[in-house]
Image (cartoon, rainbow, N blue to C red):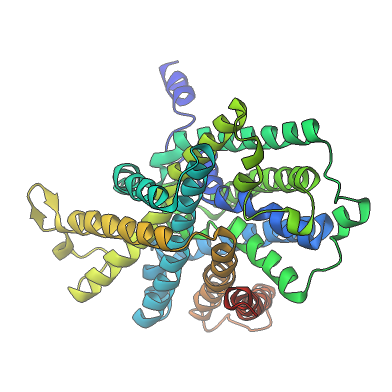
Length: 430
């Protein structure tokens, strides 16, 4: 009886399938949801919906590949798996790309906080920057020191609810102001007809970023309460991706109807809601968005912390489980001191980026194409191929698993090359 009661009380324990899925979805649903409607307004709801569906399937497959590689190598970071299967140079390159994705994502969160602050409390750029720096120091720094990704599971559940509130507010706006005059059946479904190849490609880039949560998969696989398993992480992937898809689809469909197509859409939903910012429920929803993006900050700092810790380990000549890395100073292991300094240094860099760059859309497009495509769709199939090549007797390039991995890698390479090209053109003003 007591055992059953304990199980009921611990159903949301760290490492359970549901809380792990919520953490993984929270790493995804944040900044991306705010800019999704901008792309849908350019390319049409049908194209955007197709991209979301395809992206969801690819994300589940990618997460499964990463969990398989982590479990079979018994390594729990991108750097350690790459070193185990390839070479330390590959580990450094992959870790750097992963850190760039997470730096950009975390900076995007602070940019959103700055936008919310400006909308709710109209002010100048200097005050906005001061607010961003203050949030980074007093909120993000303490959260970045958490040792486990699952630490934020309760906050993650609350922030998913906060984003549902945003959906309700957008629906309210559409009910109050009716469907925007620029929206027709054709423009809603297919776009206004002015979209270029770059616009369609950047919509895919945004989709890649929207689902990008693979950077936390090795660590979350390790934190599963039961023995880490590919089936367990597959359940987590399906659940988190389904929640993400539903929220994204609801937001961009309602937003396009409410705010219009093409140039009627602003950089993010926060700026779209600026005309009705005096409404109390709008202010509450915007503050909830700020709370939402801040609570998942640690999920993006953790991979940066892992990368910096890996570099320090290699500089000291230590492996991931070397006893030399556990020398104790002032009551903490040397590794833990490195983790703390790396986390705080990462937050400082993120704050600097957020103060300098204020355009959310341009940042997300570039991150989605350059870093997220590499981490999500190129690294996982390379891991699977490298794992299977270890068994030289049974390895065949024409087996179904290898052919699928090669196809997956080719798709990732396409998204990486052409997506980056498309994302850079608007930044350069071309």
